[in-house]
Length: 439
Image 1 (spheres, rainbow, N blue to C red):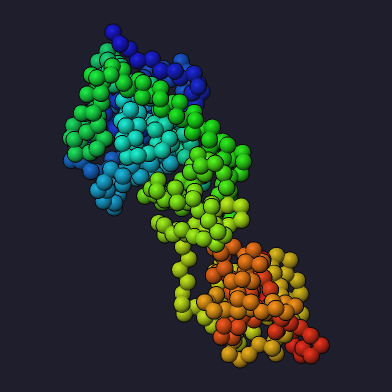
Image 2 (image 1 turned 135 degrees about the vertical axis):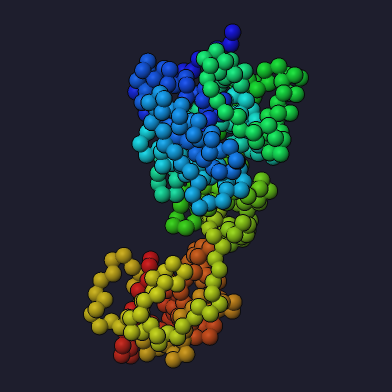
């Protein structure tokens, strides 16, 4: 008779919370851990999520509550309140949020994914054209939420076949309920489970086990590549910008996907977009690629990616409004124009530029970069503002976020960078002003 034996030594003395739907797999896992908890010193709890997407979901949850209550297993119950979950993706995201809440008081959240689930995941992702990361299958991992909370997910049944689990349920008379949606081929994963895998197993016996071995090897390779990315500092962050250093394609592609998926939370990226990002390395500095509401720029040493800036065309104000010390945020830059009257004696964390207040025309404004702008740099020499930025190695991605003092197309100051020679302080200056901005 086939029997199920799990390796639990790694969880000795730990607090484990099992996600239980009431179905065959999760009930088998909970039953097994409950039967062996004293042997391994495991503190066992459970959680149940009622998505309210099926008519029978309430009775399934009641079944789990009764079973746990009869055995003294603490159960956390989560129920959708005020939400209308319509898709499997929405249900999965809500369920994950419940896991995070439960994870605050335990070491691990355990789910009942098994070897056949792993095969379904690998085949599904492979059919969609996934890269290596998509065929690593279902692995134990630690997930961090946007708020910094951590969730340690484990899958004790991942090396067990469905046949082994079924045999365990029969031998130990484990009760369970059936989710009727599992029998419908309307969902892609169900179709793979009910049609593709059985056919594949007939053609290639133990195909699911072979896929499992392949996925573990892929996971090892992926772990190596990700460690290499971290060791070489290929991926870095500068405020709202991600920078990817020039590197080999396998490393660059992984870094790009991590940036787009995890930092910017964009899930609908394509392999073609990743390919364009990689080829951008060979373009001229300043070249850009816009996709998914993001803009990637070629810069010295790497590719920078940030959300596409949308500047307000009306974001322009008379310079005279600021001479009294009014502060504002322009493109993430704190900007203050002040008279040098002793009130602003020291600004250790700010960039301070001195200028001749009397040299600023009454028509001057505070604004961002425009086409046709020109700049006479400090010390003389007039050129286009774009060429000045190039000379100063100002990245293209931030040029349109730097506040300017301008009169028409004549730029008199690039705040935080340099003032024009036309407003420099000299022996005829009567009143000195300060431009105070972020460095």
